[in-house]
Length: 78
Image (cartoon, rainbow, N blue to C red; front, side):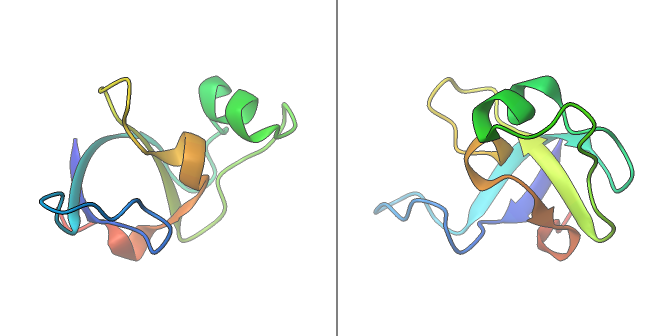
């Protein structure tokens, strides 16, 4: 699990705040997870680029890499 600053394209709702807790699923050089590839129509051999990470939320309504795709690793706080 990681704590991250919400990316610029994250939904901004009253009370939601700027922080997100997500499951870290891929680091630079790792294959893009299948659920992200399917949601973003990425090729089967897609990998995470240097300086980026991918995250998945456990809530069915969660915003995560399926919507945001790759995130700058600098957004990960802890």
